[in-house]
Amino acid sequence: MVAIRFIAVDGSAQTIDATVGISLMENAVANGVEAIEAICGGNAYCGTCRVHVEPEWRKITGPITEIEEPMIEASGDTDPGVRLSCQIEVTEALEGLVVHTPESQS
Ligand code: FES
Image 1 (tube, helix red, strand yellow):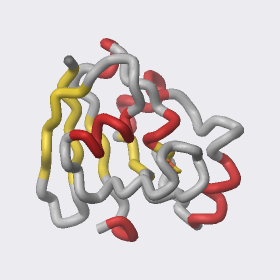
Image 2 (cartoon, protein in one colour; image 1 turned 180 degrees about the horizontal axis):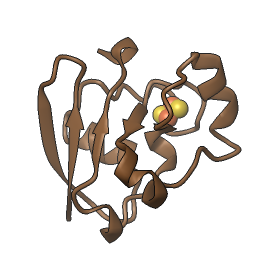
Image 3 (cartoon, rainbow, N blue to C red; image 1 turned 45 degrees about the vertical axis):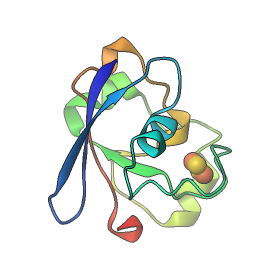
Image 4 (spheres, rainbow, N blue to C red; image 1 turned 180 degrees about the vertical axis):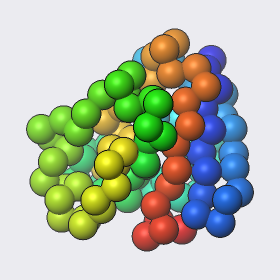
């Protein structure tokens, strides 16, 4: 288990014990992070699982992947740390990760 913190637009925070080997989105949904709707179930098709990764973590979570690009572009989300959480696999390296959820998902 790795601790991952989700911070909502209103500043409220929720730290979850995430399971390694599944996506950040799946972990968020399993732990009741309300801002992660994930309507498409992880197919990079809905954009309702977006997170904004804090700057110091972006090297570890990596850049937007090719599969994410169209949906992120369509969402109009220009945050430099934006990712689809369904495309981020949780690993031990993410212990202590902090992400923000966008206003459109609040
Ligand atoms: S769950 Fe739909 S884009 Fe990630």
